[in-house]
Image (tube, rainbow, N blue to C red; front, side, top):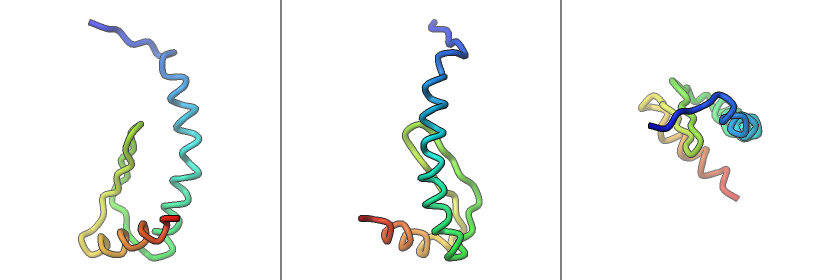
Length: 68
């Protein structure tokens, strides 16, 4: 069985800090449109927003507007 050491995660922490600007960019757009976010789930490979059913359409539209 492989054992983890706390020091093994030092690079992950620096990557997570770099994502904060991206999170702010997305979440501020949602806030400006009064989209209620119930929960945010973030892992190394995924960013998940849990929303009210009434806000899903507006949230999807907002995310599509962010496409370049």
